[in-house]
Image 1 (cartoon, rainbow, N blue to C red):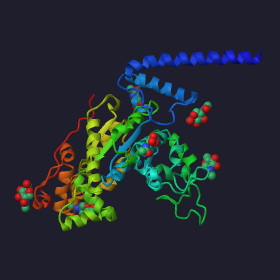
Image 2 (cartoon, rainbow, N blue to C red; image 1 turned 90 degrees about the vertical axis):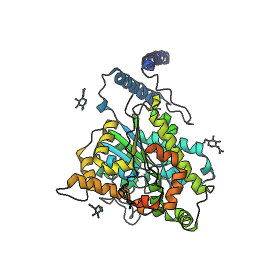
Image 3 (cartoon, helix red, strand yellow; image 1 turned 180 degrees about the horizontal axis):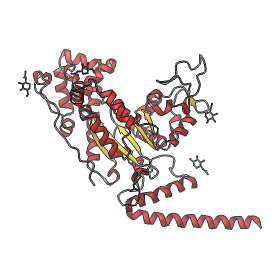
Length: 425
Ligand SMILES: *[C@@H]1O[C@H](CO)[C@@H](O)[C@H](O)[C@H]1NC(C)=O
Ligand SMILES: *[C@@H]1O[C@H](CO)[C@@H](O)[C@H](O)[C@H]1NC(C)=O
Ligand SMILES: *[C@@H]1O[C@H](CO)[C@@H](O)[C@H](O)[C@H]1NC(C)=O
Ligand SMILES: *[C@@H]1O[C@H](CO)[C@@H](O)[C@H](O)[C@H]1NC(C)=O
Ligand SMILES: *[C@@H]1O[C@H](CO)[C@@H](O)[C@H](O)[C@H]1NC(C)=O
Ligand SMILES: *[C@@H]1O[C@H](CO)[C@@H](O)[C@H](O)[C@H]1NC(C)=O
C-alpha cells in the first residue's frame, strides 16, 4: 500500500516539475531567440539529473528577468575568459582581474595540463578532440568543478590533493589562508605561494573557495578559435564574457625569440643567413595563429547573437598606453566593480615615476616598454611577419614599416587609433 502511494506521489511530483519547466522554457524561449541551444558536442551530457535541471531553470528565470529589465545585473556571478596567445601580455592583463580582491576566483592557464598530458600521448594531433577538452575543462572550472581538470593533472592527484597545479602561485585565491594547507616537511618542500609557503593544493578546498567567490576569471593562451567556445558562452548556468587580447605580431615574435629562445632559434638564424622559408612548419604555424586570431576577432566583432554583449577586443598596446583607463573599460564591460585593490595594483605596477609629471610620464614610459621590440627584432623578420600576418595587422591597426629606419624611429607610431565596436547591440 505504502509503495503505491509513494509511486503516485512521485508521479505527481514529476508532472509538476515537467509542467513548471516547460512553462518556464516556453516563456523564456521567446526572450532568448538569439541564444540558441548549446551544441551538444561533449560526450557527457551537461544536464544529467534533477539537481542540475533545477539550477538550469532557476538561471533561465533570471535570464528572463534580465531580459525584461527588472534584473539587477550587478548581482550576477560573472565569468571572464581572457583569451590570448603567448607573449601578448596576458599574464599582465590577467593580473587586473587576479588583483580584484576577495570576490574573484582567478585561474592562470589551467589548460596547460591538457596540452602537457596530450603531448605524451599519440592523440596530440587530434585538434577536434582538443578544443572540446579545452572547452569542457573551462566549463567545469567556471562551475567550480575541478574534477574535469583533475584528469589531466600529472602526477594524478591523491585524494584530490596535488602538488603539481601549474602556476598555482599566480592565482591569489589559491594562496589564501583557507586554501593554504601546512607544508609536510621534505616531501612538498618546493611548493609554496608567493606570499606564504603552502603545502600541496587540496582541490576540494580550492573548489570551496571558488564557490564562495562571486566572480570567476580564467586566463588562457590555448583556445585557438572563438567559435569553439559557443556552448560555453551559451551555458545558461554561466554568464561568460570573452575578452580577446591581441598584440602586434611583430612584437609577439620578438618576444618569443627571447622567451622561447630554444624553439625560436631558427628564426634568428634565418634572419642572419638570408630568407625565411615560408613552407616550414614553424612559419606556417605562426601564420596560422595570426589567421585564427583574426578570424576570432571577425567573429566577435560581427556580434552574432550568442556573443552579443559578451565579447570584447583589446589591444595590448592600448593597455600599455592607458592601463587604468583600459582596465576600467574592461571592468565596466564585464559588469564587475573596479575595486580599489585592482586600481592600486595597476598604479603600482605601471607607474615608474612619481611626482609632478605623474600620470603623463607613466603613459610615456609604458609606451616605451611596449615598443622595446622594435629595437630587438631584425628588420627582415619584421618584414616577414608583415607578409605572414598582413591582414591581421591591418585589421587591428598595426602599421607596416618599409625600412629599418622607420622601424627604429621612435617618433613614428606603429599604432593606428582604433575603437573596436563591441559594446553595441
Ligand atoms: C547530479 O550531478 C552532479 C554532477 O554530475 C553530481 O555531483 C550530483 O551528485 C548529482 N546529484 C544527484 C541527485 O544525482
Ligand atoms: C543593484 O545592486 C547594487 C549592489 O547590490 C546596488 O548598489 C544598486 O543600487 C542596485 N540597482 C538597482 C537598480 O536595484
Ligand atoms: C579525434 O577526437 C574525436 C573526439 O574525441 C574522436 O571522435 C575522433 O575519432 C578523433 N579523430 C582521430 C583522427 O583520432
Ligand atoms: C581536503 O579538504 C577537505 C575539505 O576540508 C577535507 O575534507 C579533506 O580531508 C582534505 N583532504 C586531505 C587529503 O587533507
Ligand atoms: C621607464 O621605466 C624604466 C623601467 O621600468 C625606467 O628604468 C626608466 O627610467 C623609465 N623612464 C622614464 C622616462 O620614466
Ligand atoms: C622619424 O619620424 C618622424 C615622424 O614621421 C620624422 O619627422 C623624422 O624625420 C624621422 N626621423 C628619421 C631619422 O627618419
